[in-house]
Length: 67
Image (cartoon, rainbow, N blue to C red; front, side, top):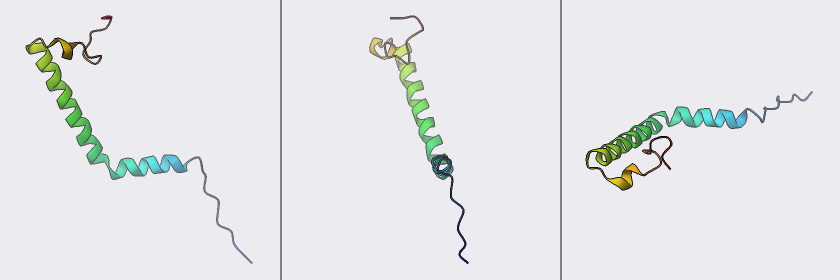
């Protein structure tokens, strides 16, 4: 008598891979977001303090309704 292995669900496999990737690189992803946040915070501060117009015209720093 031959036993068969249960079929894996193919729809949950990509989700499992994302969860595995997230758990494996959680620290690096968090550090990357922190570095990006500090960079954008510094860039916005430089734009406001010294009135650098090209920085203030970037879409992330534009006030709502401008342009």
